[in-house]
Length: 262
Length: 289
Image (cartoon, rainbow over all chains, first blue to last red; front, top):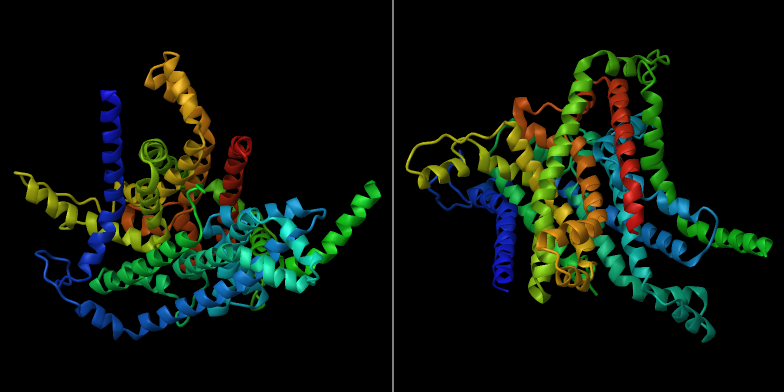
């Protein structure tokens, strides 16, 4: 029994070490955004000047707005198209359904480097070209399969008898969908939407290949800045991104359990 | 009966189509057509744009097989993928086990969330944060020199180990997640039965726990290996001049050298390798579901 206790204690210690490995670099990166020295020299002296200069950096601000706009628009598109497709896959039986469901996995499984370069070639070839519209096209396509998978998972817990009951009480198809089915799948839809927002807002690889000098997103600008040399301004903008994405994820977790526990 | 089923299936498709079409059209335009176009362009001498003459050719693939550089880099990327995957198993599997079998209730939920939270933060930012830690005069250097009585110089930045550390940090939550899901599904009474029949802890681990959680291990390995083989941003930032891999060469063809057909051929070769790997892994995955 004593060995079991020791092993359990070691296990807990191990988990905390793993958490330290995961979070220490991020915390250090964030702390450096509040340090006076532009060369990251210690001792640490508190300042917010890097956030102020960030605010005056027109290029970064415009890239940030692009990122937010694209993320919001692609979230809306993904949620509408994804929920409709999930409902169809749940409600109807038809030949080729398995195939359509299988088609959702290549976009998730293929490395973004391949998808991104393929989009660049194709969009150029058909005249869409690069820029914000191309980036939006790409982001929706990347996030859509995730939304369909998440909403479908929620639909699995739905009882079709509820729709039957509503119908027998005289509701038409639109009323059934609007008053019975949609409220039930709403947590899945919200989780899927937050998911889509995160995929788009954090997307670097695909945006990188599809952006042009005037039309970029925040991660693309950060990559360019990192390759030019590090400045605490990058730390400041990175800190903001980390805080926003983690807050989004916590919201998602509130709506949708990922742990597989009921 | 069969005719009835067929009729029902036809009417099902008719009702489903308006709901399905927008999503699948979008995927076709932005994913499936581009992938097909990439295969097509990889057999061309030049892109058929701006009226430049072009012709079909096998030259781009010949370049891959005739210049040993590309094959060497592909092998280097595969090795990188393998090493990162192995480290993720070594670090992630025990953590998943502790989460699934040692921790209980609310503390398990909270810690699980903490483990998977970082991979929703921006990958680029996480790689950048390692640059803060690893560079000369960086945090690791300063911290170790403050603690140790003798002077050492830690400058891991722009080295192979830096690339490995950054990638393992980025991908280990996947392994914890997939292994946790399969480990959690193992009935505790199986483990107790093994122990009460006289098996040692190690025997139970080898004969019961690992075989039953194998699908999670394989799924995690596939989720990590595939993107790591195609990584280019991480080696660029943390590897510096030592960070030339297959992914960075593809990136160069598109943003620096502008040899798109060669880039397309290199991408397609990578896609083929990835598909073969996924095909090999899929029987194990299918057995799990």
